[in-house]
Length: 114
Length: 113
Figure 1 (spheres, one colour):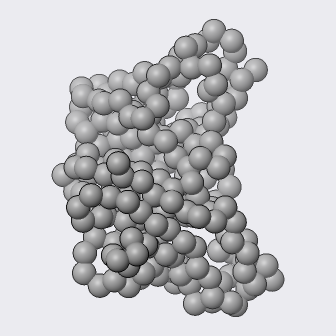
Figure 2 (cartoon, rainbow over the protein chains, first blue to last red):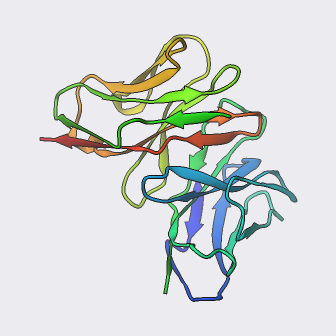
């Protein structure tokens, strides 16, 4: 079955450390998205990419970086500049140029500070 | 600016009773509206969407939503709640032509036996 795979499910970060969250999809979707979820705040967009080798900042991009070298993959790096990284991170995808199609979500990565 | 509001942090209903989870939106132009459900430590699952057409939209698991343009609302409903419906529900509106979703804060639905 097609879907989105996020790994790892749980991740711990030490002070000053960069960590990378993986997101892979086999849905042949062009667009991919990273969201951060905090209790009571809904989901906030970190970065998104509509095509390979291109991506744009979302609402809360500071302290994060992404790459989009392959259509299937959209990894997110949480850098040491992100001072409050503890959250649930969700990756999503959808076909581009399909404005009324729903986004498909992975099962998330929970990041905590050691 | 486009925005979505879910005015209730939590909704409590008894099993078998009808349920409503409220959502209001602010968007320029025609809105694309979505409802998603999230179970603990899982991703979001799509329930239903409104793009155009009938104001009453039917979706997965017996859920439906009513679009009201004059009240800028898109409330989620179900005629008879199940305990298994207990989860976190998000309303979202699609902004611009990038496919970016703007989410409400979420509403926890608790269905008691």
